[in-house]
Image 1 (cartoon, helix red, strand yellow):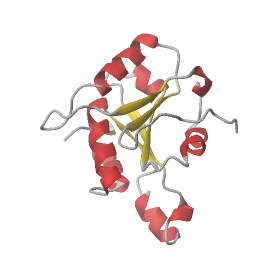
Image 2 (cartoon, rainbow, N blue to C red; image 1 turned 135 degrees about the horizontal axis):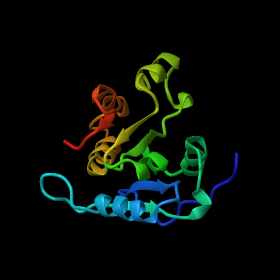
Image 3 (cartoon, rainbow, N blue to C red; image 1 turned 90 degrees about the vertical axis):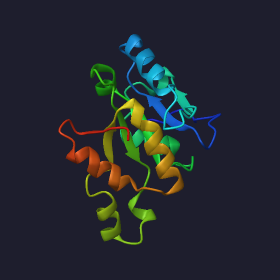
Image 4 (cartoon, rainbow, N blue to C red; image 1 turned 180 degrees about the vertical axis):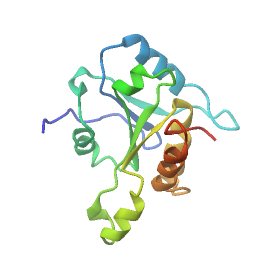
Length: 157
C-alpha cells in the first residue's frame, strides 16, 4: 500500500472530498461547483475541503482511509471514476469506522450492514457530513437509504 500525502489545512467542520480520478477536468469542475452551492433550508454556506493532488490518483478506499485516519472524521467522500462519469456525479461516502472501534463484532456488523460505503449526490454530501459529525444520524441509516434507492444513491433531504 502506498503512502499518500497528509491532508493539511482542513477545518474540523469541512466535509473532506478526495479526488482520486484525474481523467476529466471538466467533470471535476462540475463536481466542485455542485459541492460549493449553498445547501439546506437556510441555504447554508458549503464548507468543503478538497484534496486535488495527482498524488492521490487511483488511490483505493483503504489507502485513503489510512491517510486520513488521524483526522477525526466520521466520513470521507471520494470523487472517483464513477463520480466523474455519471451524470449526477455521485461521490463515494466511506465510513471511517473500524471494527476495533466497536464494542464487538456484532456491533460493527450492524453498523456496516449495508457496507462501509455508499453513493451520494453532491447536494446530499453536506447533509451526510453534518448529521454524522454531530451524531444526529448514523452511517448505517444513510447506507440503508442508498441501498433502498432504485439507483443506489443517497439523495439530499
